[in-house]
Image (cartoon, rainbow, N blue to C red; front, side):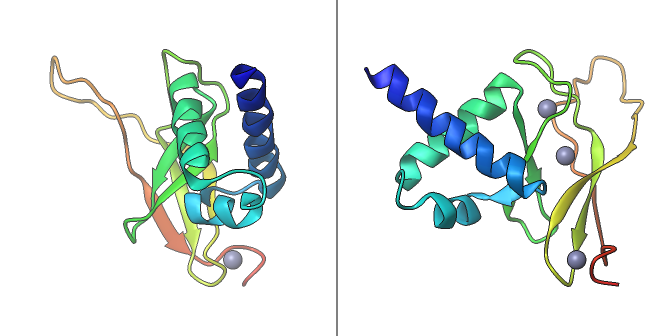
Length: 125
Ligand SMILES: [Zn+2]
Ligand SMILES: [Zn+2]
Ligand SMILES: [Zn+2]
């Protein structure tokens, strides 16, 4: 069954993200999962997780896309307008608890917010 195979691959991708605890790029995931699935499969899984409210995309200040686990999102609503922190030493990207609420003009719909802080994490200070 195709569906079963998909579920197994999805679980493997999710396990890696949960174990890693920080946001990961597709390249990083590919390196870890290269013997188990191809890049197209990983790409599809990552984007379907974004649709399902399991992952959110994080655009780094260097223009690279990372994926981080969502906390309380579902398929209809993402609320990940929190700050992200990129350590300039180890290059890890983390979700911060700090968030920002914006007052957009009337009838403007917010889709994605890109809040990236760069600095040095506690492991690297
Ligand atoms: Zn989310
Ligand atoms: Zn660091
Ligand atoms: Zn985040």
